[in-house]
Image (cartoon, rainbow, N blue to C red; front, side, top):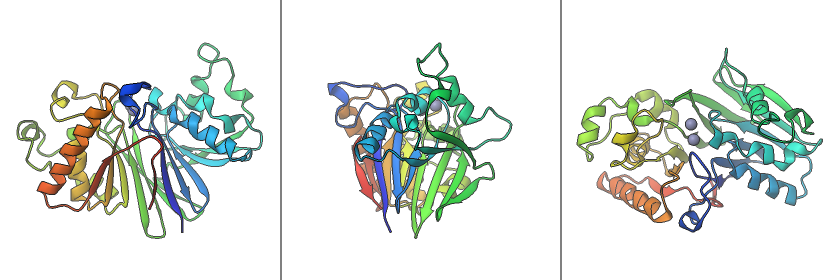
Length: 293
Ligand SMILES: [Zn+2]
Ligand SMILES: [Zn+2]
């Protein structure tokens, strides 16, 4: 079985090109999964443009992809109008709808391409863009089990897990884990104490071979950002340890963080896992990085 993961965009909030971010990358959220030849895409930030170019370069004019959006903030959709396969009438794109009684994701992708914002209309795209249903919380796609988990973020956001052949990948970005802590106040003053996370989230990520999680803030930054919808990297580390995750990628890097700041966040995260005697591997998600599970 083949289970490949590739990062096309790792930045949160806004693209940040430039020398200071060239190692971890400046493109916003986008991760590609290739599971036994089935293409799944998590988020359509500016990294999606690069993924589209790569797919076209492989002469795959007929792209079939399953697309999962954690939510519709700009940094998760802004690459979609530049996704070359969407312009091919041989492509088929499934967009997964996750919540009832809300504007559907497909319609919201229309919205960012209205003529006030963009020259080409959604209806001019050549691809078949189909709504697919994940409203029951799980589905199976060509033998891959996909599950959904609602997170803490302004305007809602959803995590996804993908499992096949005993391998598990979890994509959990834009999630203010710290707001869900049982010991929230204590965790802001005692930074070393383990953070007590809700069982439901721990169960959702349990035993993942790879967890990609929003760790946008340092412990020091977070008190000024409470309610903005993102987590402290060290809280993500504690969740990975509690859930016996094998590898944890700190993701959704803050646009204010240079490569060296991300390095220091990862170093602190590694020290935390070592202090706990945990075997989890922690690293900073890097644009262009590919892993085989
Ligand atoms: Zn975001
Ligand atoms: Zn957001």
